[in-house]
Image (tube, protein in one colour):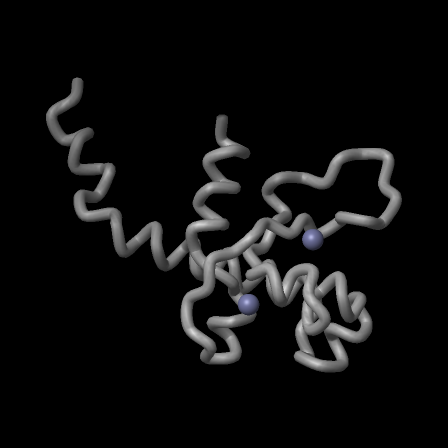
Length: 109
Ligand SMILES: [Zn+2]
Ligand SMILES: [Zn+2]
């Protein structure tokens, strides 16, 4: 399923905040952007960012500080984190894409 695959890919990126802060690559958990807002609908599995346990639920993390406190401390909103995540996925996609997809169409009729 596409959503599950996406979650695995995002988690495998490692914590975006650690990378942003030059703390290296830390194993990450998945944070859902609309998590904990009392939405009746489940948060989309595509609106997710990878955060290490500390930056997720720890004292210096998104849930520990709250969105406002998090922004004050890191000058990053959830959407900034999401943009960083998408950028990483995009870079990975092109890095591992050796053969252009269009080349397989050359011989097709
Ligand atoms: Zn982290
Ligand atoms: Zn979370």
